[in-house]
Amino acid sequence: MAGTIVIKNGYVFDPLNELKGDVMDICIRDGKVVRELSPAESKDAKVIDAKGLTVMPGGVDSHSHVAGAKVNAGRQMRPEDHYKTNLKKTELTHSGSGYTVPSVYKQGYDYAAMGYTTVFEAAIPPLEARHSHEEMRSTPLLDMGGYLVLGNNWFLMRYLKEGELERAAAYVAWMMKTHKTYGIKCVNPAGVENWGWGENVNNLDQANIHFEMSPREMIKGLTEVNEMLGMPMPLHLHANNLGHPGCYELTKESLKISAPVKPKQNLDIEWAETKMDLARERSVYLTHLMFNSFAGTSWRDCESGVKDVASYINSVDHVVIDSGCTPFGEATVMTGDGPAIHDLYTLTGNKWSNTDIELECGSGVLPFTYFKSNPVHSMQWAMGLETLLLIKDPWKTIMTTDSPNGGPFTKYPEVMTWIMSEAYRKKTFGECHKWANDRTELGGVNRELSLYELAILTRANPAKTIGMAHRKGSLGVGADGDVTIYALDPQTLNADNYEELLRAFRHAAYTVKAGEIVAKSGEIVSVPEKRTYYSDVYVADAQEKDMLADVKEWFKYYTLGFANYPTPEKYLENPTPIKVNQES
Image (cartoon, rainbow, N blue to C red; front, top):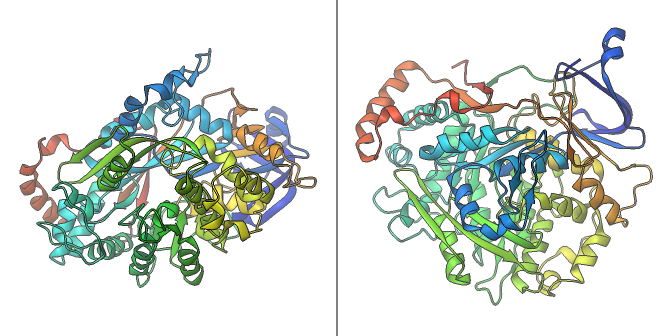
């Protein structure tokens, strides 16, 4: 029976249902978790005996760069990235290549082999949404969605400057439907617009050119718009001054801006059964905290500021972060923060690509390598782990590498092992520059995360944070039948044996997608259909009509016609709209 399976006798870690290694069976029928199967269904169902193994919901990556024009630019800039790493075609799978920026087929297979079933693209420029969806459609196995880059959008800067919050909300709702995207992404607010004129902004209250909008005003306005609409996820913020010594202070002040705004998630969906409340609790989701947490005044005296930012996050309830870990080795830096990439270019002299996207945003791409012998890179490695270990509540943290900025997502097994094994951290300390120990707090941290906490960071919390926990990140009745089985026995697990952890996390024993076994010990064994999620946000017809009259007037500044701007649903694989704000 397709999509029907029983996973028996495993140690189940499902934080949204408060399961902490309980031995039990997981039943999936027609791709969904059910309480039990009938005798007839059980007779025809596939069975996996997970005795002595760790069972978790399928992995959820809430922040990765996997689709779009800048990702393709990264592929083009890294020929060495592709001839060194390739995947042969099989009767079932396509060929592929690439390490830091894999081809679309390979990235789907690589994620699934590690136990991930859901991945969200972190930054989609509206003008490039069609191409982003083409790449997501071609990525096999993964359910996907993407966040729309709006922090320097001309229409929103004008509406917020004029105090037209309702018109700004109508514009955001229309843009989500128009480009089939999921949430609001805000990158270097007000600063990227300045980069179009060769400048940046340096503090939260510096007004940008022409629109005279400050980062503070953009963050405040977009947070209010996000909650006015009842969006699935918080404002996804990439703070200003990223990657510069001293930026941790601005990061902390940026987070305070969203504090007064109460989350008002308003989704018309069918919720899976869970013991925990699935409603969103945060008003701001800060991305890649490591890159936003440098202290000091220059690269000579820079040090980690993570402890100070973590202390603030520990004291408040409105913030959730992802880590942006840097696990050493090759990376490809790509971001909507054009000035940040140019600063890296001046530091390294590496190949550099820069794009200004009319009326909307910008981006930059640059190949990069993190060396254990480099003092700053070693410090960054330690800072990334600090973000996950110094923030006390794991429900405020999500594990990422900001792939491929800090490193490719295929380095997740190393990050998982570092946060679970102090012995593995000590081994790496011994291999890298002493700044990692001297200028961070990590050397004094003996915390080791449990399998339960790991399930929070890589499954439950990413799903809850972005409003997908109604079907992802849990094994409750009604959830998608996405399951990862690791070859780890929690009863005998020894964190000092980090080689066992690395082996288990690199290739899941089984990855199950919607009740179908898709990967077994790293080998892809089936390729079932996938879904693409987007937010179908309601606003009143009159409100939308008024906004569109203005948008059509200003569309004369674009180089394409208004009729060619939207992304039709045919660009999406199994489009799945999430109804938002339907009661308004």
